[in-house]
Image (cartoon, rainbow, N blue to C red):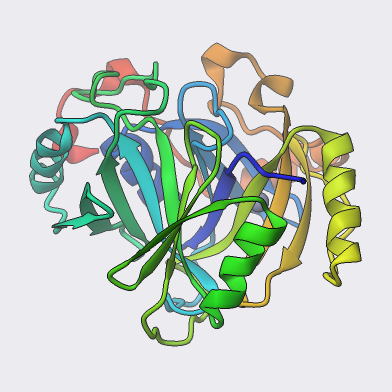
Length: 319
Ligand code: ZN
């Protein structure tokens, strides 16, 4: 049976590019691994954050557009993005959130300790203590690699039809159902990161796409050949996948699952070093070849943004 290893990336919509960099890079200590544009709308940035190498299962991406209307988190969406931190580091993160005046709550789900908070656009984020997952070799400010976010632990899906979405995870994508607890169904996959998906079973408001909501979640395919297999399988099962699209850093297809959530399947290769060196990832505006002729125009219209470099952090609370 075809099986995905788990989450490849999650993409969300926000209003402000710099504010998003300050939060995900400055506060959470993720690395801005790619600064490019939305290939379908090049006047909008597409910013990628992940671990040092931008490994699949660690990558969150944003389309920051200031005119975007506010959305509402609800059905048909990924409701919560969850990150994995090492055991005994939750106190460090609670102290850090407090230092930056971010309100948070703490809870236990499936026996694991979570801390929950929102990003500046209202996206729901949580950190969970877990032993597994490779240590992030990236460090930033006071976040040494021991404390750093390792990657996604997973995500919570809010579906219009939770049991149908559960079937998609189990019967189509190859996740294993671990059980149900306090209104959540839990699924796991084989990867070390991005391997835990919870489906919320209790009622939620209808989701509205817009700033502060997740646009889609992407699942991992091994390579292009595997992606073709996924496409045939989807067609055989009566879904309507898009053509395979070239996203420069991966190849991808998209389809809607029956619970209204936009799913993508994306290849692990070639990854983020395909067009710039590892040590300067994210510093320069990278464009696909077909947009290079528009570089000057794009550089003039896109709002200027500043990438935090590790050595420049003196007073962290003013990022
Ligand atoms: Zn995507």
